[in-house]
Image (cartoon, rainbow, N blue to C red; front, side, top):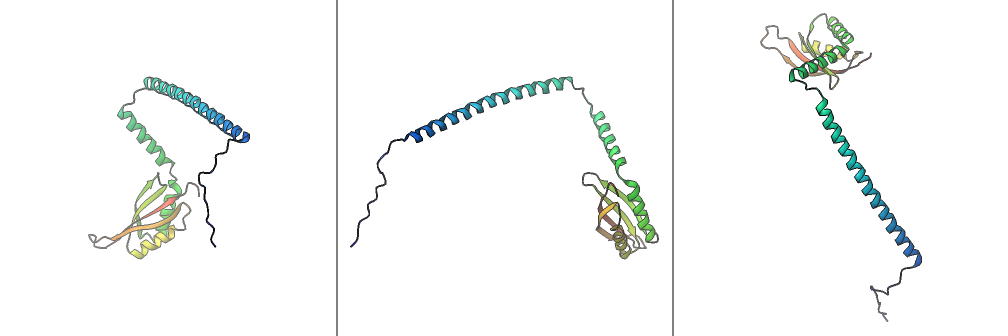
Length: 176
């Protein structure tokens, strides 16, 4: 024998209890308080933005006009100060020592710093690829150069001795 299941989805409505009414009133009051505080903060922010805009206008009127020539001089002076602050002494001494250890068969052609990345690119030339690789390996024990890596190399076909020109990069250390 089967019994029919009766489902009443609508159900009867019950009235709001005292606790439910009090919670509803507290929620409405809290929401009103938050909305009021939001509006006060928005007005305060708008006032601060107007003051900031007025100060920016006053500063723009009072600021001296800088010519493009003055700006270029300032940029080149800043670059010169940055180049002078590079720890060249120890780095160049270690590059020279590595060349001496290769019996002078490795010649450093150029050293280019990249201040933004704190890297240095060294361009050099050697008689053979084996000498170039041993030069890079010697620099891996350097105190002023971290992670020297051979970036590229080429055998110079236009030169009768066919030297190997190579480039390596590494990060320099400020203090050994």
